[in-house]
Each structure stands twice: as C-alpha cells, then as structure tokens.
Length: 275
Ligand code: AMP
Ligand code: MN
Ligand code: MN
Ligand code: MN
Image 1 (cartoon, helix red, strand yellow):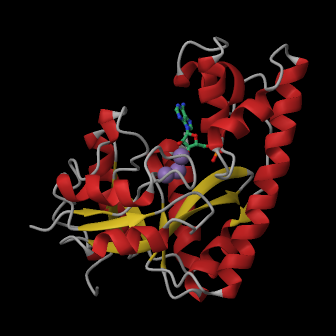
Image 2 (cartoon, protein in one colour):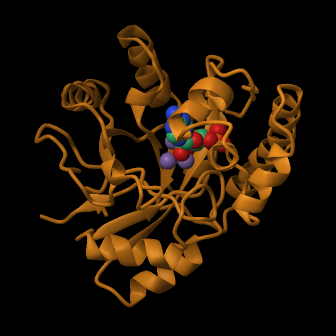
C-alpha cells in the first residue's frame, strides 16, 4: 500500500525544515506521495519538486489557506494546484498582507502586556518566512515568557489568550474558488481542531460541499480514533472525498511525524482516486 501524506509545512511558513530536507525526511519515513502545504504561500514548491525528482517520491503542489467561515478561522488545503494561477496567487498575497498587519498588532498587544520587542523577535526567528503565531510562540518561550508552545498559545496568542488578535481571513467561498480556479481540490484541514460541535460540523460539511469543496481530512496527525470514524462516515454522507495528512511541522514533534498512521478507513473514497 502506498503512503499518502497530504499536509506538511516547510520553513517557508511555520515549519522547521527546508523544502528539500522535508522531502528527504518524508522519503526516509516511507512516504510515496507528499503534499507541501505551507500556510498561504507556495514559495517552497519548486525546491520540493526538484528534491522529489531525485527520489521515488511524488510531490503534490499544495497550500493551506487561512479562511473565515461563520466568524471563525478555518484552514483549507488545496491539493494539486497550478501555482502559476493568477486568481490563487492574488488571493494568497492578500492574505499575506493581512498576516503582516496582524503580526504588528500582536506585537503591540504583547508590548502593552509587558512583553516588548515580540514582533522584532518573531521576525528574526521567521527569517523572511511569512510571520505566524508559531514564530511568536517560539520567541516567547525563548525569552522565558511562556514555558512551552502550548502555554504560549493558551495564555497569550491562542484564540482565548490575552494577546489574541482576531483577523478576518478570506471568506471560505473565496478560498475554495481560488483552489478550483487553479485546477486543485479543496480539502477541509483537520476538522477536529476547530472546537465545533456536531451540528456545527454538519453545517460546515454541507456548506463546504455546496461551495465546491472536494474533500476533508479524515485522518490528521494526532487525532482521536473516534473522530476518524465519524469523519469517514460524514464524507460518505456528503459525497466528499477523503484525505490524510500528518500536518508535520517540526522533527521535535513526534506526534505529528511524516507518514505515520495515515491509513483511511475502508468506507472512504480517497482524494487521490483519479490521480
Ligand atoms: P497562524 O496561522 O499564524 O494563526 O498560526 C497558527 C499555527 O500555530 C498553526 O498552523 C499551528 O502550527 C500553530 N498552533 C496553533 N495552536 C497551537 C498550539 N496550541 N500549540 C502549538 N502550536 C499551535
Ligand atoms: Mn502551522
Ligand atoms: Mn492548519
Ligand atoms: Mn497545517
């Protein structure tokens, strides 16, 4: 059986590895098909494609778009996108502008709360990659303002934290349209991570299907097995395809390792069935 890992990050967004090192690691972990899906940017794909050419690994060009649905942030993965598509790239660049503005606001907010220079510190860590809250978290841990990543999010920059800055990302419909315009398949990323109740999830799956979405991640890194069964049944109910991805960011997070435990339940139709 081939191993598909259709969600991963490089240091072009908030991952730790260069695209070529990511591809190498995926190959070592037995992955046959890897999608690079950086947040709101496709800059790493050329390097990843070149690295994959040397190995028995197929690199799927992808992206993870920050979107807003019913006043909440959702992530939509695009698979097999044409990176040269103008609608997609214009959309992504507008989101990156929102990210940059948000990062300044997070820095201001933290400064008011007694944590100075966070924007500068996070920027230094990001080294030119688009600024993510992950970079702020790393800065805060490094400077002793938070014990670890999860506390940095819980107490400061997570959606219930003191320095949370609410952002309006692309409407869900726009994110799906950009992916479709670029010839890709739109996938709801990690549906178990939005703290939505069952009835809200049902509404999301129905809306997403109506809007032209293709699939959802039935299997995502470090997900409960109960959730997997539930999401599998929901794909069948809504006629959605099923995807699987580790959401790998960092070799130091073994609970989201590349290629690990990504088998889809039998009842699902894989997103790759026509690849
Ligand atoms: P952003 O897209 O800049 O809002 O940052 C969100 C990113 O932060 C996600 O893609 C995750 O990689 C990371 N993240 C979110 N919540 C947590 C958490 N509780 N602990 C560690 N990382 C998190
Ligand atoms: Mn991330
Ligand atoms: Mn995500
Ligand atoms: Mn991700």
